[in-house]
Amino acid sequence: MTNMEMNWQIEEFMVYCRSRQLRAKTMASYEQTLRLFERWCMDVMHIHLVTEVTESVIRRYIADLQERGKYSYYADESKKEYNCPERRRDYRQPISTGTINNYLRNLRVFFNWLEDDFVLKKNPMKKVRLLKNNREAREYLSDEEFRKLIGKLDRSYYPEHRDYAMIVLMFDTGMRLGECSCLLLTDIDLASRRIMLRAEITKGRQDRVVYFSSKTESVLRRWIQFKDRYVESDYLFPVKGSGNHINVGNFEGNFKRYLIRCSINANFTPHCLRNNFAKRCLMNGMDIYTLSRILGHSSVTVTEQA
Image (tube, rainbow, N blue to C red; front, side):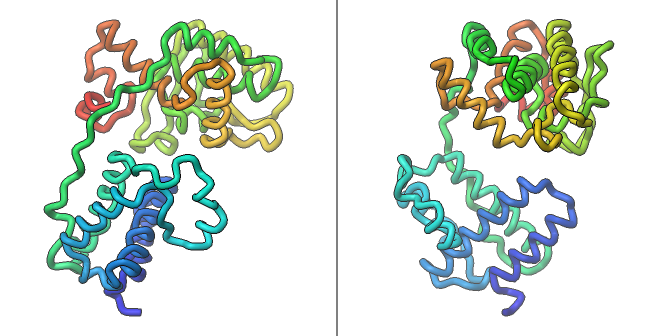
């Protein structure tokens, strides 16, 4: 293996990402994108070296993504056999423009790194732009749907009481699901109704403070009393058995089941709670700069596009 081989450079790039202490989710996204691209380059273009990747190759890859559809290509054939993509309802359905743009962003980071590291003299991503993406309407729960949702949760059942408290808290503060799920009891000050979101659990790696209402305070007090009868844990929203914080994917699955139970759009995700918070803040006269800080966005531009 030479140091120009794609496999070698991807390995080096992942080492670089680990050295920067990027989040596991970010690193997984990079590696999945790059391995899929590597496999396509070898099988379709017979390319093994990063120096052989040109702008034309990138554009052919984009066209191929648009033509072949979802789950029609795997970086690892063993995963294809295990996942049985042909059985999926959306098999070979068009890959969304947003997904393709995410691939392009990840490829740009990789090839920019190669250029900065003097591996490449010419960056094949330099002139490649993201695809035009017509913005879809954000998902919002109406007040009636929100009341219907939380009204259907059985708070005598541990998982649903926990999820009820999480839904109310996210709806009231606009925090991300990943932030909410990792909260410690020590992060919350019930008396002043404030939460310190630690840098290690925020997307932007910066501390920030959010506040909640007196109604949410009551919900949290009842939840903590309920939780303490069954689980001894430093986490605010632990799993009953292990005491560890609830997994984001597990909560998302629960949330979808609750929506189906209430006959609400099952395609909604927990992120709709954050969208609702932002919409209500703007409708009540909050300026976008303040909202941007509360949401933990890197810039006001991100808030405007969200």
